[in-house]
Amino acid sequence: MYQNVIDAHIHLDMYTDDERVQILKELEETSVKSLIAVSNNMASSLRQLEFAQMDSRVKPAIGYHPEQPLPSERELEGIMELIHDNHERLIAIGEVGLPYYLSKDEPEVDVAPYVTVLERFVQKAADYDLPIVLHAVYQDAEIVCDILESYHITNAHFHWFKGDDAVLERVLRNGYVLSVTPDVTYEQEIQHIVKQTPLSQLMVETDGPWPFKGYFAEKMTHPAMMHHSIHTVAHIKGLGIEETYRQIYETTRKFYRL
Image 1 (cartoon, rainbow, N blue to C red):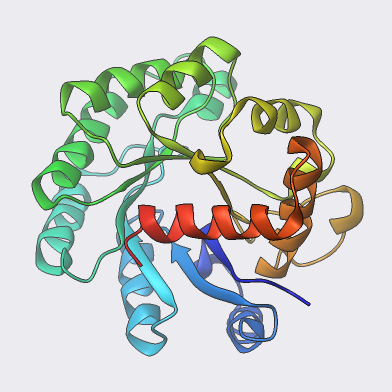
Image 2 (cartoon, rainbow, N blue to C red):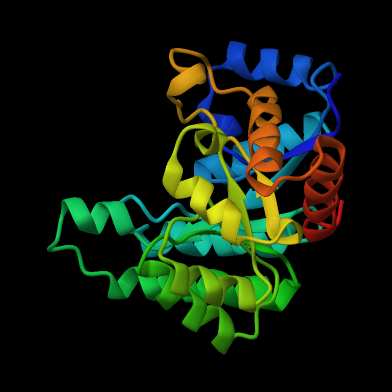
């Protein structure tokens, strides 16, 4: 018997139409109450708004994913205008952040313009009092914390966080929240982060359609996978399943004001 969960981070527009229909059809039977649908760019943002219009369980976030070439000024302005026009419908600003993997693969990439773009999104989050969903791992999380602190942002969600204990401590000290994907069931690095993170600052996500290994190998990433994640979190923390479900659900619901 499943207990209620919320997928704190999913790229709903990146599934095929058939996959998306299947996921939405199966939400109720898998006790998934809501999907925080994050965006990659302007086209993605428009689709999330469209999905949310069709299904109230889809909660749209608008942003520009940093692991890609910078947006043109025209596209960035369009996204900013979209946020302005729809801020009352939005659940958050996101996915935004810094290009850790891109700059690792292409060391010549200048990160400074990405920081400038991120600051514009942080400003929008501050202007409309919206949570912000962040792609900020390892040393990039330090830069992002600097920016969040300078704008007095308190509602920040570091999705699929990775980083050393010092960075993690700073993120947690600021009251920010983290989410883990199904890889918590097999990745020691993520299990270590869970061990250090208070349950009250922890959420679960899929980052679907990103694929996973272990038990999930060769399977379409589905929000139902979060039930495995929660059982793993409970085991790591030595807590009861019911308590773990309840706290993670309440943390997510409260953070996203659902």
